[in-house]
Length: 192
Image (cartoon, rainbow, N blue to C red; front, top):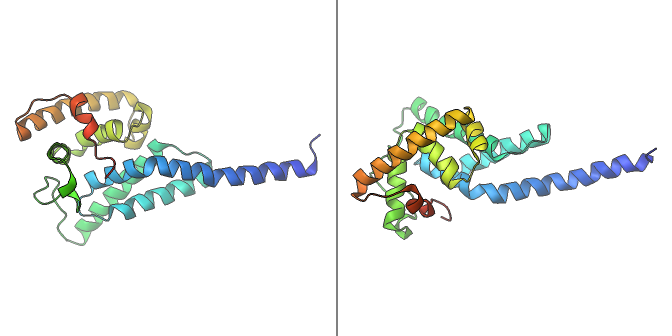
């Protein structure tokens, strides 16, 4: 029979690991989440969108004890959608995703190929760009990316295949260079 103090020790122990576990999750996923926000929400306060997504994830984690990257990216996608809906309601123009202007403030330090990739990603519809960003740049598994997009894993595979073809075609058209995804996947939007 357990002693009366043993259950409180287990509670204290799990209380100390929850913040540490979430902190590790945050460190691992912050930059990819910020990159997704920068690609999909041009002109928004991307850091604030990511912070809101992590806050919702923390609250979910405290309630359910479940912490997955797919869930985080699903929340972030919703926050980005909220940003665009809010901008339309205010009747202020939202920036086009075709990047006529600078992509971000620090775009001058990026390589030309990096900028080409960002332009191509931003020119694609969300049904193509989001599966690519989630799987190639955010390193989500198929199940996590499908969860983030609110679709089944089989549907994700089909969308990803179509997205890959659309990306390569657009990259070739915009840059005049034929390439493969393996050649351009290191150019990710990470480490900004």
